[in-house]
Amino acid sequence: MHGPAEPAVTLRVLTPQDAAVIAGWASDPQFCREAEWTPGQAAYEYERFQRRLIETPPKDLIRLGVVSEGHLVGYVDLHGADPDRRELGFVIGLRNLWGHGLGLGAAAAGLHHGFVELGLQEIWAEAYEANRRSTRILRRLGLRETGFGDIGEFLGAPTRYVQFAIRADEWRHQGSHSAFHPH
Ligand SMILES: CC(C)(COP(=O)(O)OP(=O)(O)OC[C@H]1O[C@@H](n2cnc3c(N)ncnc32)[C@H](O)[C@@H]1OP(=O)(O)O)[C@@H](O)C(=O)NCCC(=O)NCCS
Image (cartoon, rainbow, N blue to C red; front, side, top):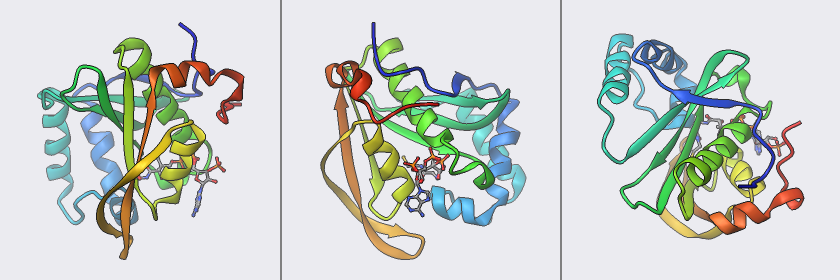
């Protein structure tokens, strides 16, 4: 099966040991604001929460670790109970790693996993309009804007969710026309 070029990151199954790494990302309050994580909890609480998610994930959540240069740098989610259609989410955990293409690579790898490994027919996503990094990534990967979701707040300013989607056939036929060039 053909699709856009292979992403620059790899995905792997998370293990309980990863909970401490993921929980560590919460020690940056600005990361919590941007990722919409509950701020101000004790480190052990974040870790316990993450460990539980890894050991006993909700039935409708597939979460995979994003690995770059041998390190766990983020995760991608494919979420939802529909056998043909799931929602993509992605996080890069350390802000000093942002802006180097890891988010794009993670989201691309998530699409690849969803369409190739899971055989999904459609993947959708939503991001706050004000979350420019995220909407930029989704557009670059060829997702179509499909409408608006809920109103909310991003970094203290009112905004709304923009929703996106891409079908498996659209994804496969992007080929060299894709805006995604990993290198
Ligand atoms: C969104 C997120 C994954 C992006 O990670 P990243 O590694 O910085 O992503 P990339 O480097 O691949 O791409 C970021 C893009 O945003 C652009 N960008 C960066 N800062 C920006 C800003 N202030 N305004 C507009 N665009 C900006 C970059 O130029 C880049 O686009 P380009 O490659 O076309 O130049 C990361 O910020 C994150 O984890 N945020 C918290 C969680 C989240 O918002 N997840 C998405 C919701 S589904």
